[in-house]
Image (cartoon, rainbow, N blue to C red; front, side, top):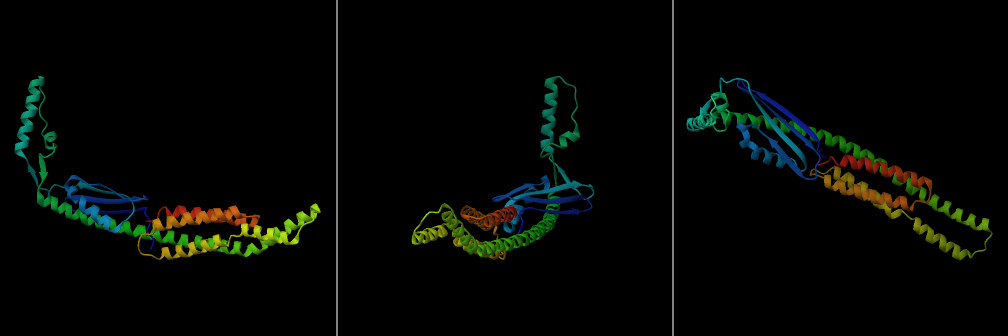
Length: 288
């Protein structure tokens, strides 16, 4: 089962005292890159969130954010660090005295100083627990999105692969016609120039030319790559890198096929093949 690296997941949780909103966003990336933004009360959750994500996601750049909004103070408990507050007040008074200013200390500004006012442990534990529940809900939404998009990519790749196999079959069917047409063209050139020639040597040269135009090996490899791609789509483990390698091999064989082409039909089929491969490659870039 394919999983897309681009996905979005969201969840919210509201209590009588606060509201939590968790969002996960992901785009394609060569490796796993996790960025987490958490509010102060739940920063201790970062290792747990990172470990949880690493257990279910293998590639992609993932941004995780949790927003905490206080809606009521009824169930909120605080503790004031009186010792630190006294030191801050003394320092503020000394600065005011030395500068000759007559300003007063704003209590609200003092409370905003880090460490002056903290949420009691019981409240922090409750917020952390609720935040983890909110994250899990968002994660499930995120994973479901990845699987849905991955299924769409899988169907598209299967369809493009079948089109690619049809082109390979068409080129294979045309090969005897192409060789015969090329042979007739060479014979016509000799007849037009009224040049005498050794028929045996002529046959040898035609054999050498046919060998140079032979693309059976490239067509066989393209068929093998199509079979391998179908197998990869059925695997349960991440196959993004495997598919990326297959796209490179597809492109290499198509280029060789185009270089050996000696007729417009094969050239046109090769161009169509390269278009399909590029469309597949663009989709593979989003596969985990």
